[in-house]
Amino acid sequence: MAEARGLVIVNTGNGKGKTTAAMGMALRAWGQGLKILMLQFIKGGSGYGELKAAEKMPGFEIMAMGEGFIRDAEGDKMAGHRQAAREALARAREEITSGRYDMIILDEINYAVGFGLVSEEEVLELIEMKPAILHLVLTGRNATERVIEKADLVTEMREIKHPYASGIKAQKGVEF
Amino acid sequence: MAEARGLVIVNTGNGKGKTTAAMGMALRAWGQGLKILMLQFIKGGSGYGELKAAEKMPGFEIMAMGEGFIRDAEGDKMAGHRQAAREALARAREEITSGRYDMIILDEINYAVGFGLVSEEEVLELIEMKPAILHLVLTGRNATERVIEKADLVTEMREIKHPYASGIKAQKGVEF
Image (cartoon, rainbow over all chains, first blue to last red):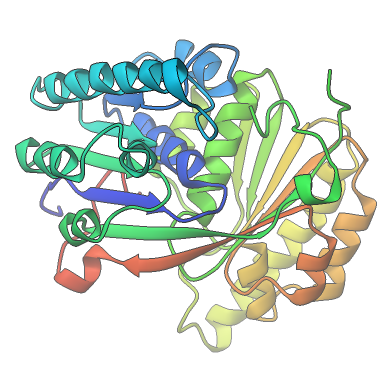
């Protein structure tokens, strides 16, 4: 029996599959009876396949606390993102120390750092405060050096080819 | 409403997350009501989190048709892998054309090609024979150029840091 130890896992890079791989981890962990929370820093809304799936998977919760698409946000829109990220961060602190979960996924938190919605320092604090047994998964492009340093497992997802480039539309069940 | 079109998706590279991201795709697709088959070319056995999860997810099937760890296999052991791969390939042909699934994941098929268990030509034929609407996901390191050429979406998962390197054991719910 291997010693139980919570890992800090980072999925970063410019490609698809960072959040998707985190969902795959959630699926595997859920199969083993673990309790999982995915807390989304950017994504909000409903209708996503993963939200519908989680509704049917007791023990796997997704909280979509973001405001959605951020890349070109300015002014009021950016203030909304900032506020949403503060709330997600407060929630992350609370849940990480709650003992209610075996795995917590902070989805797109690295991306939120890139946009200045959350500071690198705050992310490092989340890692520091986690119980030893908790698996903490951080996704999003541009994970910082210091976050990578604190992680046990880091994977970079690189885009080699993307269907949008050849004019194919987003497909239900794949992209959302 | 976007036009429904089945994508050919390849997850390759030397990092974690190729199979895991495919499981995440399965989870999202399952949430949208799609029927999914994951056919594993290398992995066999039981006890894996994803198998336990799929048992609780009607509409998501996993067939673990491999013989397990292959890297140092020789002689009889390699013959067993070869035979298992032939059976998995026959099953893949049958299920791809069956119309029973909306998404089929051929897990580690690229890796099986790398070991000469399946030929590149046979993989290209599977892609050719797929119904237009079917999403076909091919995982495994060292996807060949011609397979990448046929794909719509290709992601390379690169290992940046791995916990085994620092002596941490495989963790239930994360690694298996």
